Image (cartoon, rainbow, N blue to C red; front, top):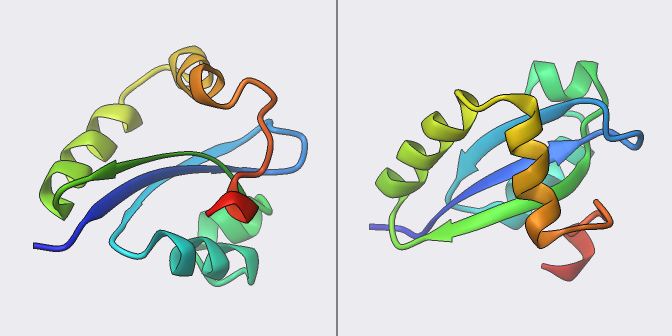
Length: 94
């Protein structure tokens, strides 16, 4: 099985978040940046990668994505800040 990733992207003001899952993190974020990642991310201009986790397979990544989508906004923000306290765009560090 392929390696899986969950990721969280945001807009420049960090007011809206989107959680996704993929096997190709760099390629998927590039699609979001071009405005073709998803209708939601395009509508809210979500282009900055602020958080991601790597998993040994896509199945585990999907389970984690479902878990995080049920979290409150405050919990998600705390998770993001635990690894990215400045909420910087991590895309350039991939």
